[in-house]
Length: 116
Length: 113
Image (tube, rainbow over all chains, first blue to last red; front, side):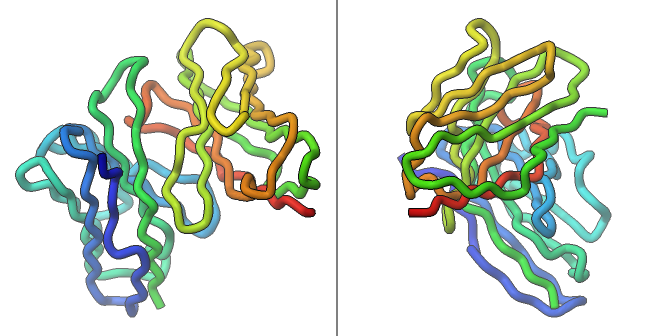
């Protein structure tokens, strides 16, 4: 079974440009999460999809960030326009269930975004 | 406020030596606790988790962690470290496995020969 895959693994863009990150969850996982780790700090929750619906997007930093999950399969996270402080590692995770003690989220390898 | 503190930014141990990584948390409800590891170029991998029951939890790769409610701690241990254990380790707390999990800042482990 394939794990959570993220594209690209690295991205270097200039301030003001647009970048789109993609996440392919494990097949059959309705729940998809985006997290971000900035400058070696803690990994922070961005948002949670259940299928194609945004269950919680309270962690999204501002309106320059747009996440979508059309069709309830893969998800994209677009940053437009990118700012220097957006640099960091963006993790995607997926889980079969959203709540409950038997829930485990599986993480992708992350996309390292550098804004220069 | 809910938070996870990993006091050690980095730790260096000799191969074969024992390891303990510290984790303290602040969480209003009964926590679910996790340890993840990230090796270079890899994603976050779940080492172990605590939901309830026995406070000593066994995980993969020979790791274990002990939940101490009185100390709000969930320290990770391994009796004998291997060079392949060099990685970054994250303690996390949450209501479930993925939804709004709160992570610590991570502890980077270096293993010397």
